[in-house]
Image (tube, rainbow, N blue to C red; front, side, top):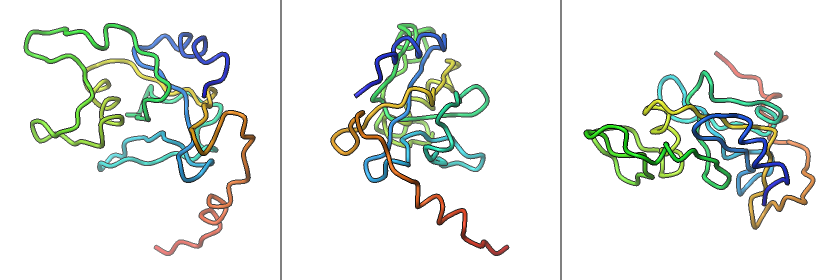
Length: 151
């Protein structure tokens, strides 16, 4: 489920590949948005980390493919020796593979395409979180913030 102004907001980003955000299946305050960490792996963003922000200019970002707007050129072949961008499910040439949806975003950025994820476009995630759901307090985040971490 999508907000009414989704297409307009994503078009205004004027990038090759754009998306909104969606809650994860298990927790309304988690999202399906990840930022690639320096030493590898994905750091998952909480709703409070991204709502109201646009990310992807400086960092490698990825998300599910529930709400994407892609320019046609993303799917076209640009060089004879390079396959066009596709969803991959197997490792090729020893490169990392996060899963087809996330890897699609990583591959797009490695191929030089501009990407953004707009935290102002908040979609639902069916069946658990329809767009009409108004949300609840992020108790998990509060517990994590309250934790005393030792060095």
